[in-house]
Amino acid sequence: MITKRLDISPENYGDSIREAARILKNEGIVAIPTETVYGLAASALSEKAIKSVFTAKGRPQDNPLIVHISDIDMLYDVAEDIPEKAIECAKRFWPGPFTMVLKRKEGIDKSVSAGLDTVAVRMPDNTVARDIIIESGLPLAAPSANSSGSPSPTAASHVLYDLDQKIDAVIMGENCKVGVESTVITLVTEKPRLLRPGAVTVDQLKEILPDIEIDRAVLTEPEDKEKVSSPGMKYKHYAPKTNTYLIVSEREKFVNFVNFKKNSGAVCFDEEIGDIEIPAISYGNSSDEKTLAKNVFSALRKADELGVNTLYIHAPSKTGVGLAVYNRLIRAAAFKVMEL
Ligand code: AMP
Ligand code: MG
Image (cartoon, rainbow, N blue to C red):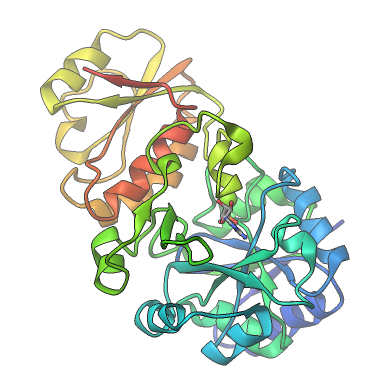
């Protein structure tokens, strides 16, 4: 199939939004920008469209999708038995990089939730994404618009690299501001639980949910892969093609370690790249977690172009949005983490 490039410069904006909505209403699939990463959108009411998303991405069938809405009222079309805390969270964190797992409402296709009786819901902080939802009048299921397992796409060019000719259209939008996927919490367990860290931090969540628990899978490899509460967390994920290790260490030790490695490359911080003698890509200053989040996935894609056999990534701190970056990188390294 030919993948349409939809231009959203001011003179074409309206036409492109209408074309994206038309494709979605006809059960097609369209990659759209959001503030986190590019999403591959499909009608959450169409089993056929959802199937196309799983096929285009090569996504495991048991990994559910997040449903995107454009205003709080739409939440009632997607979920039911919505607790008061969910409304408080929605008012505080939406639109934004924040997803809640709630009880799924009938009408939302079962395949969206990979058969679970729950549904993950988010309102993105991106005008283009919200305009497409409004124009189509549909809740949109949208996982990241990459091939399953590869680094998430934060630019339209990343989407085309992975999915050209596999999807109906891509919105040629700007690069994503946040750069890592949304924070996911569940509110269907006895206590609220963080399933995936993102740009809404644990400290922010605690202001509304003081008793929130952090799922083990956030920082460690799940032992029993059948029992993970967020299926997406059990896979090797976000990974470059190159064999990758995550290195937890101080600056000097990291530099000395990688400088002895032959046929290898480094993904490192701004303040150390000048001392690194092997091919290297920086993803920002170590103290600036927001920039690290914004750059991490494009750095992983660029690292695959270095022509090396092995990659060593310098791990960020786990504070603030750094926790989300660390969570993605342990998976990018297939849990091969070394402390120096
Ligand atoms: P992605 O679409 O790539 O952003 O991944 C969506 C993430 O949300 C995955 O980690 C899923 O496992 C998680 N998720 C989506 N729906 C649910 C659900 N109903 N219950 C638990 N986790 C979910
Ligand atoms: Mg993904």
